[in-house]
Length: 137
Image (tube, one colour):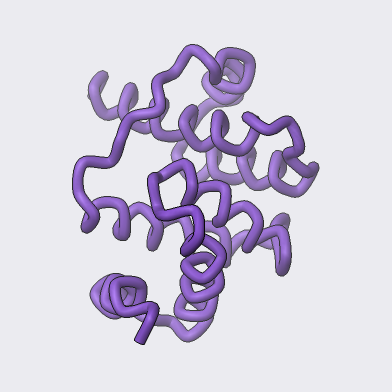
C-alpha cells in the first residue's frame, strides 16, 4: 500500500507542478486540483503537504506512448466531469498537461481539442487512443 500511496502522490504532485510552474494557475484550476485530490482519496493534510512542497517531487517521463495516451484519457475524463473547470480552461489545462507529458508542443492544441471532443462523445479508451494516434487524418 505504501508504494501505491507514493505513486499517486508523485503523479498528483507532477500535475500540480505542471499547473503551477508558470505561475498563472487560475482559481478554477486550483479548485480542480482540490477536486482531483479528493477523487484520489487524499486527506487534507496530504493535499496541503503536496501543494506546499510540489517542487520537491520529480517530473518522471512516461515510458511509452500508450501509457501517455492512457494518462491523457484519464486526465481528460477528470477534466470533463468536473464543473470547476470548463470550456477554454479545460483546453488550457489539458494543453499544459500535454506539454508536461511530452506531447509535441505544436500538436498539443489539436490533441487537447480532440481529447475533449472525444470525451464529450463518450468514446472508450481504445477509440480515444486510436483517435489521438490518427489525429491528422
